[in-house]
Length: 440
Image 1 (cartoon, rainbow, N blue to C red):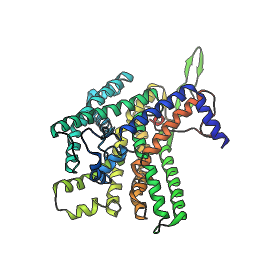
Image 2 (tube, one colour):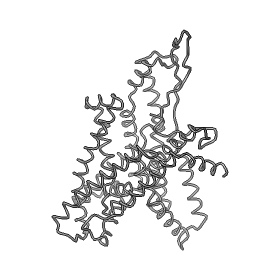
Image 3 (tube, rainbow, N blue to C red):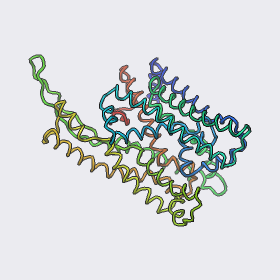
Image 4 (tube, rainbow, N blue to C red):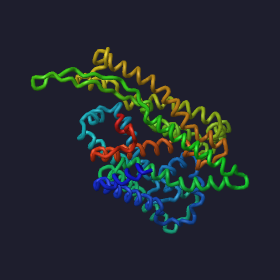
């Protein structure tokens, strides 16, 4: 405990880090306030139906990422999701569009160009999504207190402005604050529902039909173990030994020694779950809005606690994990970079042989990583079958858990870097934190 307070004191004693933390906390507070400001012209007392609709399915996922702004008909209703969609489109475009591939290889200047393209694409996406959201408000019977034409114009404009503002907040946190701003905005939206879910579960277990304190404490221990498991999966790496050719400098021969190439067991992060969830919600969305009679589709895709839903969900995560890993990691480029820098894997020729070895190793470690990722994804459905309510169960796995773990690790890694640079002890004894950023 003394070490904990000493670490807090060290963090607060670094003025630059203290200012960054205060700025980040302030901007996150602004985002949370905005998530509760209702669109102009809407009667807040008529949002009950919209909030019920946004409690599950694809809309429930969007609502969780926006911290309830979606169900509140807020000025930040679509939040940062259009920006994430635009980022994914740009990443996938890098596979097929030569100009995007060229910018990805141009370093900092290329990154700035891609960021600007992503911003413009975000505006186009939110501009296309906003009418659908406004139409859904009408469909759910939300009461409008101003003329309909005026409301449509104001709502469309404000939703676009809200997403641009959220994007600006995220970039400002990244540049001037601590941690990745976009990721922090998503995480703060997810954990905004944690207190309510916690007290609801506590009240349920202490109620007449609940299991009492013993069951609740077992739930908390289980949640702790699940978080440890998610952290282990996020940080797990396969280290490939590297050696570098000796170089002559100043008349002396110097060896750069041995280092390691870290390959993440879960290189795709949370993206396979997001892709799989989006596709799993499509059949039910089609049935809901078209009225198609398809009982078998409802039985499979309408019950997130059912066996077939989770089985199909897990298979899709396995497929998307391999796909997204192939998109994210270019083994040929890694081998070329090693060759240019005089590095090689002992026993292998630089170039094609190195690329094939890295690719083979990556394929072997991706399979267990994909299986463990699928297990985390279906874990909420499993614990719901054990009696946990849906809102509390989402913290036992799935997208919410992995985002929280990944963002917290990244932020703590930056804090630890500040401490070590000021000759303080790190956040942990005997080891260094590994976030996502230093794995790529």
